[in-house]
Length: 184
Length: 184
Image (cartoon, chains in turn orange, blue):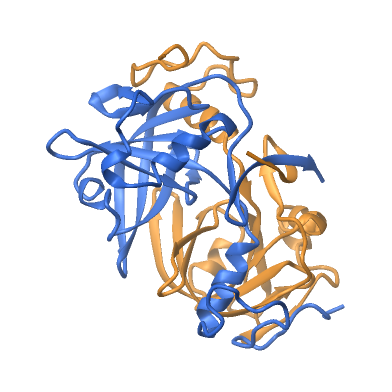
């Protein structure tokens, strides 16, 4: 009954070695193995820098925290190109991406200077950049920024939003973009 | 180009009304609409209560925070049955669930007293409950608990873990369990 599980806290599995990093320490190896087997929805977070420049990034860490009040969280590195703006912003826009937003997901994960070149966004509430043709978006106020090492957990209280056309949800899993498949 | 997006911060879409809560305020409606269109991977978090009783729950909020050091986050209500234990625990086990763990996902989202009745778990590192036959699990130390209203964001530093048999990742989307489908 326990054949697939190793009880020792730092003993790693007999499964395939980590291709990218065969000499990773046990804690990192466990982390990478586990998250490789986890699927995540894809969101995009945008805001304005103090000088009015739009900034943003593709996030697989978006999560619900509570419905009443409506709170969501996302995680980011404080070394990320968007952090300087996120560190001081009052509000952000959180977009849920669908299958037809794959190009936008890649654009907002690409070179910082090119993320808002194009007609895939427009100014929305508070002048914040709203991505067009997403399946849904929410605007909210940042209510907490929790620094942890060189990262931050950001908590957003949702104030409103809008919906786009229906579409399949965009997933990121095993380094590729997917859509939800069969029910189990 | 903007036909599907409404720029006003609290104006809701012309899409279908909220079936469950047609009179929800704008902030809650936006939140519900958006998260309905977001897919999430399914994890299970376990720990021990101070008296040694295993506790845990099914989570769709698990997210990576950083790889070096390996950090993960999850969110929970402080009204949840597992919170009393999570509030004081040193360590937790985070399990990634696969398609064949659907029954375990439902069990750990069901009545609190029945979540650990059965042979789907065993004591692992530090005596913590480890679910058997999951695709992967990690044991880690709780390094932050951020209270936000009646909820908490919990940050875990991963210390080790193990892998089970390969399986499709378990997703939760549109109130049903799914597996990842086609690449897009």
